[in-house]
Amino acid sequence: MESKLSLQRWIDEAARQSMSFGDYCLKAQAEELEIPAGAILDRMEKALEVMAEAVKHGLEGKRSRSGLAGGAGSKMQALMEVKPDGFILGRTMSRAVMTALAASESNACMGRIVAAPTAGSSGVLPGVLFSVGDLYCFDRRHLTKGLVVAGCIGRVIASRASLSGAEGGCQAECGSAAAMAAGATVEICGGTPGQVGDAAAIALKNMLGLVCDPVAGLVEVPCVKRNAGAAAQALVAAEMALCGISSAIPVDEVIDAMASIGHSIPQTLKETALGGLATTPTGLRIAGNNSRSYHSCPKKE
Ligand code: SF4
Image (cartoon, rainbow, N blue to C red; front, side, top):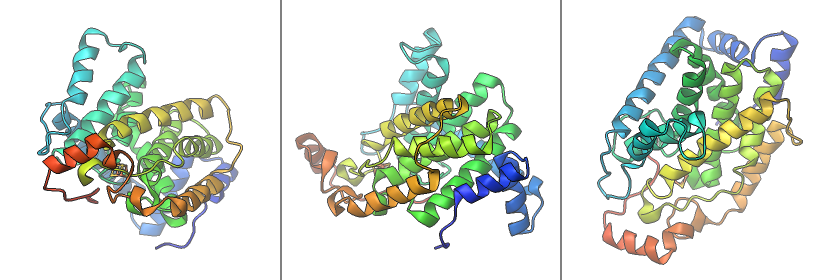
């Protein structure tokens, strides 16, 4: 594992150099990997392509092998065809929810996804990036800068805490994904480095304590809908940060708090399917019907 990194230090350095956080991260990564910045953006564009294919696959309405997941994204899509603003949420939030559901369902149906940061939370970034991209007509190349920022936030979280539900609960998976997506959104919308940090901190704070309790040990219930919830949290946090609302607790300290909470979460609520929703009467009945109770968020590349 990398030694502890500081997001705040990178944010301060980007601000000192009058660079956007995305530009600063891109330059630093290019130097570290000794490759041109354009090559990194090319890779990010390919990742976005895979994300878009996952969403398309998820919207086909297929069901997972267990039958627990599938069809939610396509239901939202059908609604948006007749009511583009959804019932309540408005176009951008509705689209984020639909897209996150679809990408996450694609994962449950063994489709190809981008584990950003994990397979279990792979719906959050496509949900947020594609809905904001749609709102402002951003092209794919513009969205790549958001992915660069998301990657840097994820890297810091991995170094100070964890990205794994088995280690830190769902706050570490869907919570981290929300923080990454919130920071990415601020970047693509032209926010400052400080606002990127505030968005990440606010999103993560709103997900602290979230346990990992997958029914039948499958990354389907509650995972698919949690991706939609995390996408919504990311947009809420980004909106606040872009308005100039800051996080009272600095981002590195929020990440450290997540690590400490993760240590306090009992083992029954860390991907073992021995507590929470997994051991409700219905959860147990579903598990009984799915004797193929293999588990967890397979980390796909
Ligand atoms: S398996 Fe656990 S950590 Fe992963 S998405 Fe599901 S509940 Fe969250």
